[in-house]
Amino acid sequence: MTGILFDDIGSFPLPPGRSKDWMKESFSKGRNNRELFAVISDAFRQKMEAGVDVPTYPQYQDMNEQFLSIIRDPVKSEEPFRVKQDAARIMELEAIEELAGEYREEHGKKPDVRVCVTGPLELYLKEFGGTEYTDILNLLAESVDRFVGNSLSNARNFNIRTVSIDEPSIGINPQIMFDSNELIYAMDIACSSAKRAGCDVEIHLHSPLHYTLACQARNIGVVGVESAATPSYLELIDRKELEDSDTFLRVGIARTDIFNLAAVLNDKYNTNVWKDGAHMQDIVTQMETPELITRRLQKAYSIFGECIRYAGPDCGLGSWPSQEMAAQLLRNVAAGMAEFRKAL
Image (cartoon, rainbow, N blue to C red):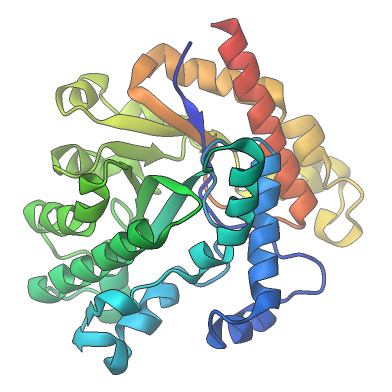
């Protein structure tokens, strides 16, 4: 039986009655906010109950500000762009500790968790745009590694199985001025603690155009590809390149581009599904079905075989209209993967 695991990328819709402004204010109050922790914990519970093998902590913060707001704080940094070790905390992981403890008590083992952190290049581009200060890129990489290292050290009731570095600009953003060797060096710094801890270290790319950077990095072992919405992305990946560098794939097998999916329904029903809502459920009942998800995974497996280590939705689900719809997509993925395994 194949060892492909089901994971998710991170973001998830907010529950009714909670706005982005409320979340932002709650995060600013710090880790003593029980209401905030309850929102995060409940979203994580829904992911586990949907059948995700390695769920990511729910991402409700801006991917850059979640880390930069701490790194920029002079009280929390040793020097500009190098965060203090004890200040490099991911609050969302603290929020799921209690739920993970309940799971551990009930099942006799710790749940597996995927930790997603914004990569050093993405943080650099947010702060400096199209400039080239290699020393600052490397300082940001050290800070990213400290967030990961702290997470590994402080996890009590869950096992961090996967650490994913999110670098959406690689292969897309023309502002990148660093050469390949500089990017590879920074990525290796950012992943060093995760590699030492024996985690699967992934880079999540929105375009696989430069996936070979990850293959050349010593500390990265998995490349994430958003291949459900764009199946042609798989054609850019050379299986031999993966095998020669001992690199694996994380393939997208369920579309998450909700606005494009909704546009198909708008054309089909000559309406605005965001307003009337009557046909929005078609996305999880008629479009992104378990059967289609199975076929996508079968197609990817026919090309890459055991080079595939993880599969799941293309990207995060934060823009989806409700938690129930997002959870149903996850259940569809679980069912599709179960059928795939059965067929083997």
